[in-house]
Length: 176
Image (cartoon, rainbow, N blue to C red; front, side, top):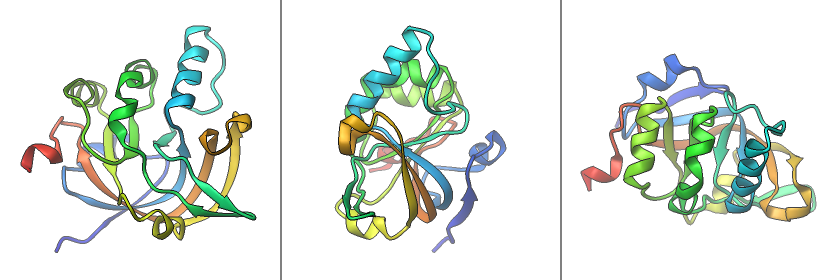
């Protein structure tokens, strides 16, 4: 079995273009949670030409609504990515090119990932408690009023990912 590729954030285009569908990655650094509600808020900010709480060129968006117990993340499984597809175009155009979730993406998202040289990673669905062990610390970045749907920064170490759509538009699900 092929070894995992160890990468640190922020990811460069040089690193992204080397990755191929089915590559396993262990990611260390910062990832940011964002689900439906946050995507809508980011799009509102973009349309009003307001400052964003994240740097689009550096942020890796994890489709996740974590749960917490005391000061620990106890669950952080991926959300179904297809739900975010309707929001991705304005975000990817300004630089949000790297996402993490679970499941298939629409043909339009595959086209956008190829056009803007992005990447889509999947991680293990149904393993939210397991995934929480890779989070070494976290903080609230924006929209705390949304609770688990706020933007959180997770500092991760060796977070397990699989390349599901590479920057060339190849899609893991087309092989199934």
